Amino acid sequence: MNPYPQPVTVLLADDEQLIRSALAALLPLNGDITVIAEAADGREAVRLTRERRPDVVVMDLDMPVMDGLQAAVTIHDDDPDQIIILLTRHAKPGVLRRALKAGVLGFLSKAADPQLIADVIRTVARRQRWIDPSIAAHAMTDDCPLTERELDVLRETSEGYAVTEIARRLHLAHGTVRNYLSNAMQKTQTTTRHEAARYAREHDWL
Image 1 (cartoon, rainbow, N blue to C red):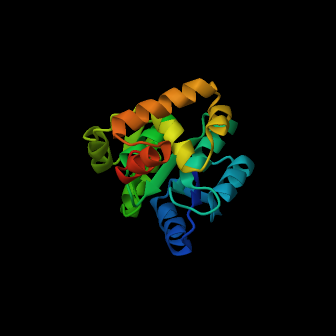
Image 2 (spheres, helix red, strand yellow):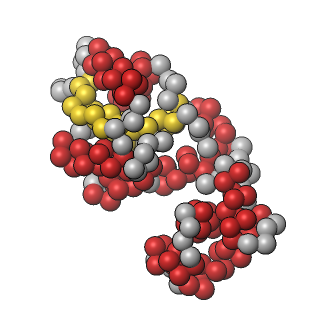
């Protein structure tokens, strides 16, 4: 019995056409899911979400042009109520934290069985969060000593931005950014902000 008055409409975004096409073919077999659009990168996913307004967006985390997390942030800037699921091969705790902060409701392995993905689509369509248990366990045991803001400034540093630009992008005072960077260097026992950013990436905190 279909639990919804209408099928759940889905936008699929994945740069791997074989995987995207397979999901597009398999998900509708459940009867209550309809794939209404497909995107090959994050920017296209943002555009198609604006145009088609799917119930649920299912995106790969690692895509060209704009990755799934950046696309999720952009989509939620447009519509905070849009439901998003991220699929990933590499479940880094830092990425999970950023995804939850961005309002992503579903987070699971890209290797998940299509039936599980369908079940998660139904779950998040009811606005219930679903996080892959192994990813959640990894995040809970993560011993990152850095605060979210310290991670934010290191993330911007790793993207190549100077302190002045980081302050502008994060809407922080110049001195505040320097304080966050100094704290991060002390906690990671590094001597430069670039070394601190590299250390954080190597420990999967970013």
